[in-house]
Length: 377
Ligand SMILES: [Zn+2]
Image (tube, rainbow, N blue to C red; front, side, top):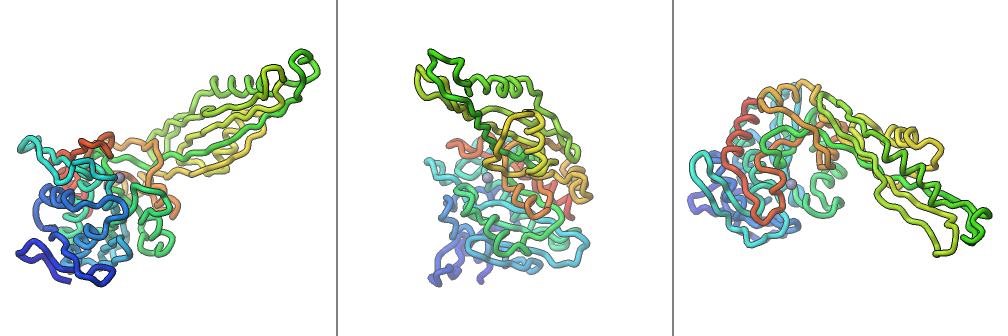
């Protein structure tokens, strides 16, 4: 494939065989300028071909990288026989445009901000990845750079998940970083989530002769009191503190205004620290609610931050920022399922992700680039 030409546009064969124009990405230059170019390539989920073409073309110009294209996933990796391999991943897609493409800029110098769809989630991180991938010709750890599609839509379409299922060897590594926005701080792991149902059984009777029945809704009172009195644990995992949560999230029961209810159903959600397996999480809830029959209806385990690993410890030092626990469920859990500890680390304020006025401070792009370079150089 053609490398960057003076025209600013390169012709690359598309997957359908037709030649499409894709903008040239300058990986040797300023990551903030690159971020602006990336925003201007619309890439709403399901429509990532142009940006994937541009990323692939640019990376193929880096002689030190093996580049693999699979659908709209681009993988680039070094083969330096280092003792360790790390994976650094980011998604190319965005939520739908809201009159925020092309990009705009605000302020200047140190306060420069880049505004536009994907600025925060997560083309700032992708720009950092691309510049580092091109710059680090001799990284001290082997690196697998992954750029994937369909993160912002249904989980079964997720490009990272697809590669994990179909070509897991491409995700091999001892530690992974997802360049999602975190204000340039390290957010480690993620919590697990479990749904449980308690079906309380009573005996129906006419409410005029309540003593002949048994009220299932009243039985729920003891269950709800245990939940209300329960102090959720704060659990230290690999140096980060995870705040758990155990809550009733739905309740139903009762048939009519004159009938003692013979059933009551309570739904419970447990957000648990990533040191627990699904079985341990279920056992914990049963321990809090003795005597109640609980059925687990859904579970997704969390992901350990893995900050006790040498690669991660050095990453913390290089970033020079504190690490905190991630409370939601993110793609780091996909790495955890494969036994690879993972953290989030990228420019941009996560609370601006998906906002119509999303933006990324230029200073954070430089800071994240410098941290990754310091870690891997
Ligand atoms: Zn994202």
